Image (tube, rainbow over the protein chains, first blue to last red):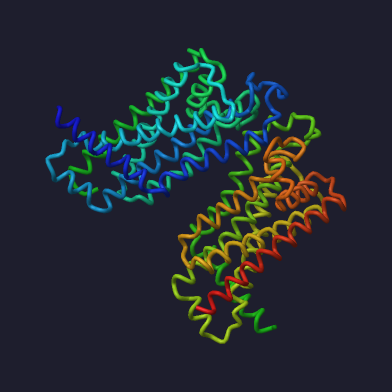
Length: 260
Length: 255
């Protein structure tokens, strides 16, 4: 057990260092969400208090920061999955499997690496937001809840990426899922409240799990004590993370059993 | 002159035929403007309740953004195709041939313009399906011409990058600059609604005046003021970025 933990730690450390040493993997997850957040804040700054249905917020930046955090984790998760696929393409995965390394550690190490990067990214986004005037109404507790939600989302997204990597063995195939996440993000309440949407778009946003997740994150910033939204968000992300881990495990065993 | 045009057309045709032979290269540039149209108009529809929108439909307000983005993707495609041709050695063979070198720029430029006609048509059709009618013959013509102008400007930018970097790995640089130029303008809201730094940047960003002219055409309030500013913005962008591409071409020829 202790050995498996050490191996998991070593593989997680490798995943983190790999991300930090690859600017093309790290920069998109930081650059795009922050730029979009800045542009949306400047474009829609007049919306709070002026549009019926818009939740009471101090500024649009308070509203927008949860969407930026979520977008960063979606991009980072896809990158983590692609990195795992590169390990498969490059033969590192086969060498790991042939070694006495715990097989659980191979999977969990990669996911833990993604979680650490996602939590650091969340703290960075919050720090930048606070520097520009964001106030987290939930205080330290709210930040902790945000970190838990970010960590679980990272497990779900990285897990899906790892699953695809195990099934396809191709980094390109994993990167190809990015437009799907992009669509999920934009067809949700990540950037604007559901209460202001209408028609079929609102129906899609209502059934999109990302909406509930981002609303749970956002309520930590703009409301503070929001048990209902938090529980719904937690339920959604725990379900997604559990499904991703189960899929990963099944794909891992299937890959070890023989050629796909 | 006739020879230059016929070689340019040949290169443009070669680029356009890829649409049929390699749809995976072209489809994203067609799908993205539609995605931007639907997701922007759906997600941010509520912002149009601000008095500054004057009751305009947000879908109609977003159509010029989508046509401009479609034109931008057509321009980026021109640069990416040129970068691939440089890597693959096609450009070297063309330079060694008696074909005028300017055709290396004119051909992809023509292809970008023609592709932007296609993406603009698709976006306008999507608007029709969403209940936004065409803005009359003159307004529609202005929307098409501005899209062609933007595709030419972005094609010159992307080709200038391709001629200097000489690798397809420079594609993100081509894309990011075009995205930023569009999003740091009046992409989501009119200038009167913008706040802080974005308002200052959008005031000096020529894409602002291009989108405003296209938007005025789409929403049927196009006047001389919007038209000349939009046309001047296109002329400035095409002129400066054309020089950027030509300088890149002379650098390539001097290798």
